[in-house]
Image (cartoon, rainbow, N blue to C red; front, side, top):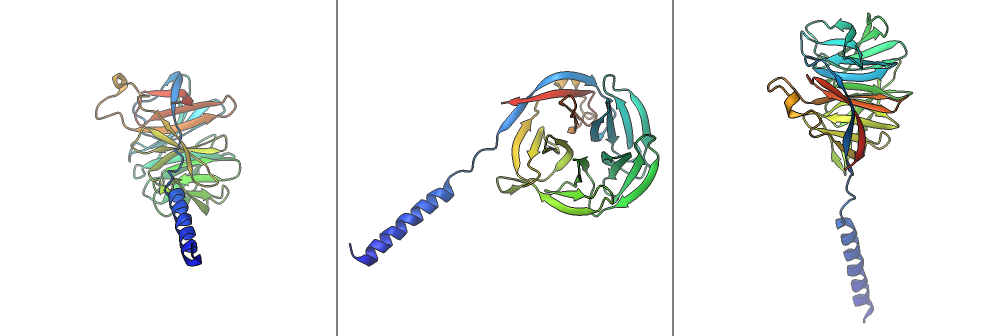
Length: 260
């Protein structure tokens, strides 16, 4: 074979190999389901926005103007043992804590508030552009969602944004990231208006697994026109317990994640 034809043949072979490699499907992201471990009562009038577990209690924030509050809740009974109402003009959103401060967002007012974790007394406020959806934390930073594919990382002392985590699934941006929880080095995020939770690698922003909670709240426990979407994740690190609920759900569930 003449040299120029040989070179052409080699080039075509290489091109075919490259094309085949690029056309190969990316690995599928695993999907998990759940097993209910325990069921607890939950206030069916709580439009749940934020949720976390600390020292035996659930801390919850609720939304809707005129009905928004932050509350401390007894897990076993659902009893609200302490609460603070937001000004009626604010739509409450996610909460987390840092030291002895409880930190809360509002939806479209571009302002958040800091409270004394023990008394719920307002201690300060902070501003941010865009919407506020949810908050969580790890040992050195606070993470905020705003409904977009970008999670904001905040300095826990100043609450100023330091960077962003762009969340993707196999290269596609994932938005509607709602309530957040940090669980054993990963971020869990409710996807608003779905029954799915994304497990996100905080270093890359990649969705590494999906948790499908379809059917968690039985149809018999749903009130048409009242019961809203899945939202609210809390984790008890000491006992390795994961809790989930929804907006205006009458129940809160402790679940175990299992292979589908």
